[in-house]
Length: 302
Image (tube, rainbow, N blue to C red; front, side, top):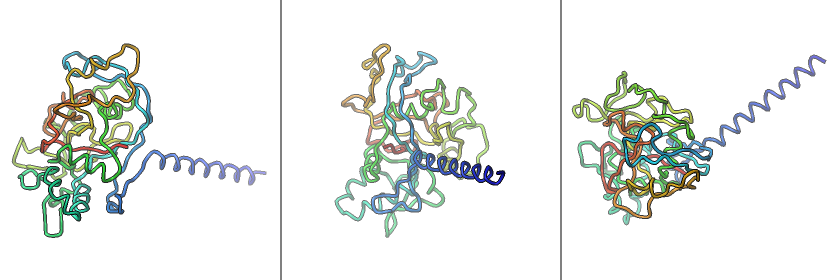
């Protein structure tokens, strides 16, 4: 009788393990590129269950483009666990370069001649500079980020998806880690901790720069660098009055996509060069889509 009871308990135990593992696999997907080019450095995406949340600055009215706070409903989506790295982007470039028609486009996507570029062109293609393979891809235009997303059958996140993920599916928090203004939680200009990772631009901007993705703790959803390191391109056009235009009291806006047109695109999350106020989950910035900046990168969404 006792042996039978132990046997039943073992069966239940293994069923639970199988369920947990299956559930975990459903919540994380890995993308390897159209021809398995990223087999050694796959892009990992984490599932974010959809829902309704209050979007915007819930703590002050100091920033006009972050108010009014409004309800937004987003569908379930997947978003990158990490920012896209230089080695992943170089793999994409090498795939694109096989088609000579893409050479002109590549010049519109990246900058490799500037002193702050983390990649270089060699005889047999593109590669990350020494020890910068795991750093976020910077010096990439919005068009370059979009092209990478298309290549891997993804897209850039909307800013509503981005904020929903950054605030752990609607938590009332200032930063992805909570409400503490301690600068040790993200790679920002005022970072107060100790980090042994190699930095970019060691002789510029107070010896700061990007660090390898995942160098800091993730938020509750398991997403890394939602604040600091590199700002992130979103798909939306930027409009300082957009929240006012779509606001409907007590009625959620469903999957907002941003204005139909504009001059600048939204970037989110702040960077290594920013003060902590720009690392807030509600913070919005406008950047021209053809900008090549040493503070802007991206992550993918699906």
